[in-house]
Image (tube, rainbow, N blue to C red; front, side):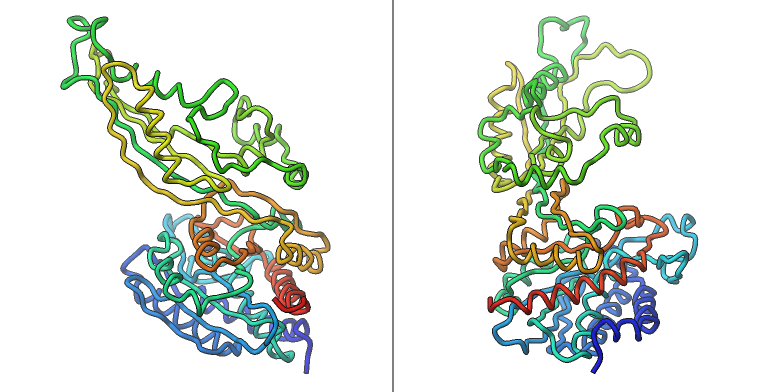
Length: 457
Ligand SMILES: [Zn+2]
């Protein structure tokens, strides 16, 4: 019998060989030309899980790409951990910007280059090999389940119904996802919040036709002026969103959370330089990290109307348009926020302006208390591998599937990333640092051991 670490060291070359084999399958979920490849990547994964010693391996067909399930449930009284990840990858164009072909994996300078190397085959592979190593060393310290989809890069249309249908089979005490990044090299972090999202498109009409500004100007409403005036009412001078009830469900930031977020010590001057900003702006009373991670927003994404061609046209536009999105936090309800923004727009539209409002996407926010034991143990596991404890962050982006998992399975989600933000995910020359491959394996093995050493769930 060997220790998991000895096993992983001993088999490292073979494992990397296997990962390269998987990475060479072009499982681009967005392109129908790769449908068979994507199915092949699912089969490859199922075999890898089987070889690792997982049981009940199943490739479930869906209306799109398959979902792969496997489990190992021989740790009675111990927690059950569900690993989620995805075996599909982003398209690879522009192809000419790749140093080596995206589906011919190559190691250069301690990094493994290939499409999917970090997002997400490389990170997901760590969980398979951690399980394999623990099984080779004896038994798994926890009950383990895998639920791996092939449609993450196309918004997971078939996963939510699968989760609802298989809720019992997927029941668990923690959901473990490695599809994110360290804060920076050597600085692990665990994301404890993702913002939700809602969107709408607004059309404002003031006349049946564009009008001549010489004949009518000064006596009729102008759709662009009406729109600009209306949009200006959405925020006050302190950067707060002026929509009635908008902040319902937004948690106040505790002193502990503010201290935790401050650990990210973002260099605001450097950030301004990198982005070409003259100033940082935002809601009064909050830092940049708080504004972008822990507070909700309302942003104009597009505003258009009237004449935009060369030269002058003396026209009074009959209509104007805007696209608006909100990032949401805490318990904000996307449908309710949309409704309230729409009500605000209708109440503040000037005389003679008629509105048409088309609601768009809606996704709830995800957030978890960093004090939860499964998160504290995850930070400990990182510390064992990286020599520094993971800090807890909040990410301003939206990953609807994380909130869906948390809601459907009613279990805490641990976002345990091993990538780096600079690894060109979704871009040419995607890669994964092998240093984080090795430390990731150590972290996961340690984490499962720590979870298993806890008193029964
Ligand atoms: Zn991903």
